[in-house]
Image (cartoon, rainbow, N blue to C red):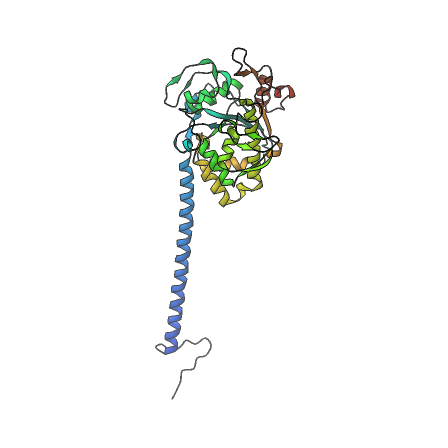
Length: 364
């Protein structure tokens, strides 16, 4: 009885059991290969879909304002091309989720916090100038958010400009005050601020004296404290119960917190960790309004990456020099010549003179 003997390089006879087995093995191998390829394809599509969903989701969170369209051509010229000036606004709207964070009986919204952040050419340092909300200023004529003209007015409180004309009118007012071209503006409300802090897992601040918690504020002993989003909001809004209880004193707390928050972002390498960055971006963009040039995740990411060289330890915080108003001592006015010296230095990307940092109003 003869047997088929397999030799190297010789195929099994067609129809033999061994040949059929080899054919089935090759078929199974091809099927398994196709399954693996299909599985990989599905996974890649899922990842791409999730990435697109995340991108679309974050993009959809951002509201924007076209500053050039809203303000027009009557704006200061850019002096130093490589420098950037960003107006950061914290609004006190009680609408939506914000109402759960502050139950004050206040309609509309105001710019509860306003800082003009100057990033010099080279972007290694930055200067943040806080504008006191109680400052009496001349509001230029501007277009409100409804498209109607808001007339110019003298001796109006700075924080009232937002409620009448919206963020574009605040930008125009700051440009008129300073002669500085505002390149970008970023606005975040109560809910957005709380979300940012909670996404970081809290921010650590240090007090050199107790905070009494007067008028529903935060009560803290002197020393180091890790604050969650809700308490952080109370911290930056505390006016009574710390220092002299003035708005000027609150500015010091806001600047202190901003530096602590930037340090926390740097410490966690939030910009270099995709998962943490997404969590931070999702929280931050939920209540974010920017100028139209920053109104996309790509633009915001590129701008944030360009700011990585700015070290919070070298960032300078200054309050716009103000003096107590002679007619109403509860209000302040821009102090001269200090303010002019400050704005001129920032406009030309130069060192700020020591005299321009001194404020005649000593509150806080």
